[in-house]
Image 1 (tube, rainbow over the protein chains, first blue to last red):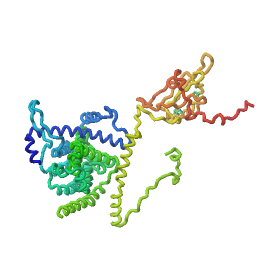
Image 2 (cartoon, each protein chain N blue to C red):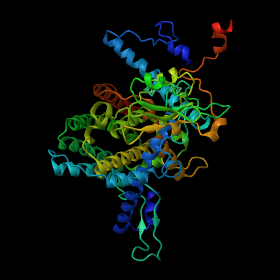
Image 3 (cartoon, chains in turn orange, red):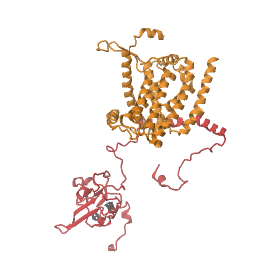
Image 4 (cartoon, each protein chain N blue to C red):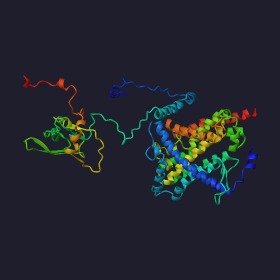
Length: 345
Length: 207
Ligand code: SF4
Ligand code: SF4
């Protein structure tokens, strides 16, 4: 089926990929900004508050106000900081988050109409980099995102930053193991690392979703995804009550904003992965079109992150390590082994 | 929770709900059992349910708790001690203050300054009356001591200002003459109690 697709689709030119990259950058940043608004609204509703209300109707333009604030705020680099690393670190977080999105299918593909000068007729693919190791690439890129908080915390000459970056190292490295192992079982079942293959594997409707076959892997992936995107209950990197703001203590203005955008882009990536790998991808569900259902699924996982943030307390670093190495990792290994046995029998 | 319950300080008699915590397990197996029990008990989902219930209640049942403060205000208790008001007599419209000076005398932060003189009918009139709200501690003594219920505490509590000293003149606190029909009798600090008529004793003059 893919062979037919490749034959029908026009050739992907470098211009198309660049346009796609710009589209991803622009739209995902906007969605990430909108995500902050949604987060504040939903958290507020769950605490019976109203949330942002005053800028624009229902506070919708709050993003614009925040953006203006972030862009115009003074950009402070502390005196004893390692200036170069301090300045580069936020870019690492934002860049790795967006590079990970390069291998994720976002928005359908289209061709720019002929009448537009210069770019007319360029085919814009749905995936910027359609590589056959999609899952591996995304996980690897998100793991590389670890360097953002790590370097930021170490470069800023602040004890809270140091604690934050130490926590970054233990948390991201440990949970990388759980993510990898939990996703390994579905990969074994599908026999491919391509997200398109994952999608095709679950074509049989609701009952063929991977989360029914691999419930343990699904739960493990969600837990590890929360940890890797630094969300409550695993937001140890920048937990205000303990380490002021962790690795982001000394950051202000747009550099801090880049950490923020990176975090939200990572949340979107994890939501997309959960939706495509475990929740049936973009196959049509009954009468609901595929593109709509995948947006709904992604939105649900995103909502779940906010919901959990409103509901659960966060845990201590030692509990985090205990959970990872004594519970989640053994369970993930057992899950992989059992999956292997079942496949062989 | 009603106010009576809230004021009850007798530990043990309140309707507290005691949380039953299990003893800390001693053995490794016990700890393992505790982990398994906590994992599958579904307490985390109770937490999720609670926040979702609150959100639905807030959005659809109208249990939103936000008060949009400058636009909406909560009612304050009549006993609240905010910026003072000067009341007028309802019948004549004349201000109630008789210039006795008790409030100036009792004010513990010395912030009331007043002066009186005789008017053309040889009646006492208040010629100067200011309160320095930069010094006032809103203790309520002036309202309590006033024999005429003339100076009372009103409901204006937004008294942030750019300077420490903020004087209020007699005319600023006096009920505007055209708003006389809206003047409320004060039932807060130092006001006449509801059963004052019964409690009052006949004076010897009545015999
Ligand atoms: S409330 Fe107390 S401090 Fe303020 S004017 Fe009255 S007596 Fe003085
Ligand atoms: S105590 Fe009352 S009547 Fe006497 S001067 Fe003060 S405000 Fe006037």
